[in-house]
Image (cartoon, rainbow, N blue to C red):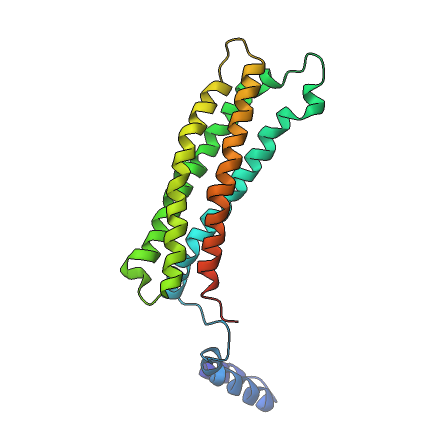
Length: 211
């Protein structure tokens, strides 16, 4: 790289000091980047692939947690006391169709997110891809993966509440009660599964940070 700059600068007038400075800087760049005193390292394709493998559980877990939190806020808004206190309010009639329309695309966050988080965390914890990781790091990945499995326990109850919310026979309080049940299940899942898994993946990732 320094030779390229030298060649270019030879065609420019009065550039001897500049040429000398740039040449010195460029020639010392590889040594500077590999200096162990730096907290970061240069990025290469192999390093990028390995970094994505290590970061994937945290990235996916963060997205899943935010999705669950958004659902809690969005669905809960249909049951706010001021709204339910209005005579002839239509919360139940709206949520019957709205819930299904919202859930259809959102289900892919669940169907893809949790299995992928499980797969990547177990790859880091139990396969040769995790060679060289500290046992504590592997444990963080493994425990986070186990929590990803537990999500499907709550998923069975979620499907039950989904069916009750979408029932169009005598739409009214029964649909609202079903939504309350769904919110309770979702809130418990966030506290028991999403948040602890997210913290564990943060801990696993933090072991790579040089401070």
